[in-house]
Each structure stands twice: as structure tokens, then as C-alpha cells.
Length: 129
Picture 1 (cartoon, one colour):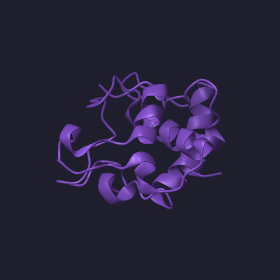
Picture 2 (tube, rainbow, N blue to C red; picture 1 turned 60 degrees about the horizontal axis):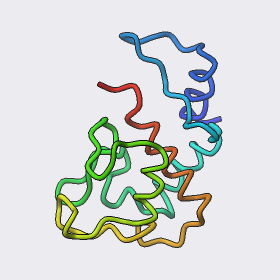
Picture 3 (tube, one colour; picture 1 turned 60 degrees about the vertical axis):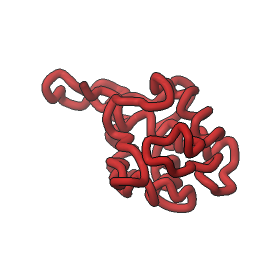
């Protein structure tokens, strides 16, 4: 079991110690820890999300936003909004970098894979102020 999967699973059970009152986030409703883990693999692999958002999802200057904070540019950051944003993409006119994020990141992800990536992204900023 990967570290992320373990942290999410143990956090969901409430077994992780609190760090300044924060616990590891649970997956969004209807999503399993295994799906979040798979989403992370897709983000860092065939989904090529890392190309603009970085392997650590903290963004690449001039290419893509930091996905680890709670600041959302195109939505309020709900799981379903993240799913919709990945599917829709971001036109250059709406992009802070003026670069296009094509639908599905320009890849051939299935609907399930998009949902897993969205779940992974959703967990990145949860619990941060």
C-alpha cells in the first residue's frame, strides 16, 4: 500500500494523530482510497497533469496553478467542480497563464480516470488554511 493510500485510509478511520488540529483528508463521497491513489498515478503519469502542475502539484511557474492550496481559480473546489473543470479544460482567455488546458488535459482519459484524478486533486488542498 502506498503512503498516500495508507494515509487516506488511516485518516478516514481517525487513527492519524492531529497536527495542529488537522487530519489527513478523507476521499470525496463515493470515492475510495484506492481510486485516489490511482488518480495520483494518473496525475503523475499518463494524464500528464504534472507537465504544468508539477510532480508535487505545486504548479510550474508560467504553466499551471498550485493545486495543493485551497485557492481555486475556476470554481469553489468541490469534487464535482474539479471533475467538470478537467473535462472542460481551461480556455486561454480564462487561464491565468494565458495557456490552454485542453479538455482531459489533452489526453484520452476515461470518465473514471478523470474522476480519480479529480479525487486526488481534491484531497491535495483539503485541511489546509
